Image (cartoon, rainbow, N blue to C red; front, side):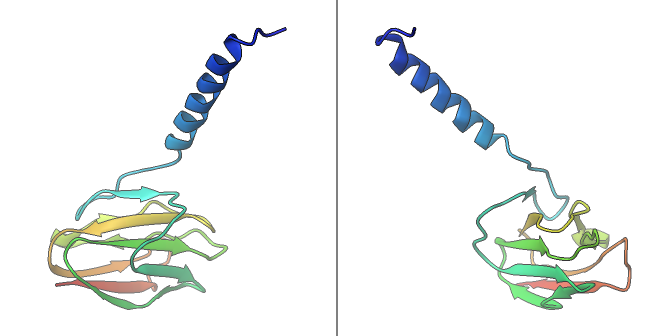
Length: 126
């Protein structure tokens, strides 16, 4: 049986372990223009939805420093990959996954799904 003095320590250790496991959720890095993260549960800022083999909106206009979250809602895996000097790449995502890219430089970011190259979109950063 656990003594009453040890219970607060066990509770604190359990809470610390829970916080640590929550903080170790899935995350990954995007390429240029800035790091991104996968598995985000809260989306603040503009989003691009991937569904029905389309990026919606097809063109998104944002300000420098804006975080854009790509939300995969299709049953088929997709990614978003830009090329050239304004390159970025999301991982291949399955339904329900999200990936955030921070656009830290002005420019036009044309991207495609490399799995389905007929899918294309643009982020214009000013």
